[in-house]
Length: 123
Ligand SMILES: [Zn+2]
Image (cartoon, rainbow, N blue to C red; front, top):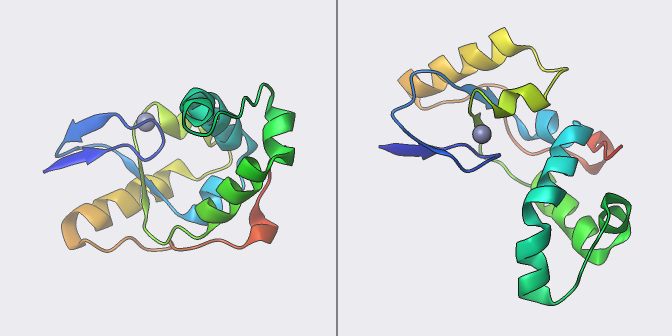
């Protein structure tokens, strides 16, 4: 089975190494949002015709607010590759790795699920 990293989209066949994060850990990391903005601004401009030039503009925009809400509602675990885990300084890597192993062997990812808006940190 092919898995892709939920942050950069890189595909991996049956990954041996990886990390599982919960939505709370994702939304509380400002670097994730910067990355999201940079990775999606072009395609969003193409789809909507709206040019959003800066991260601050993104945060204030309807698109930004809707994106934040949509992401907090993600229930499924986040699979991260070796590169993307570097965005998450405050995450306990050993724990995220252990969750990955549990998820790989049992299909269950502990400590994951939706987040609340109060957990979001954009800056
Ligand atoms: Zn990645």
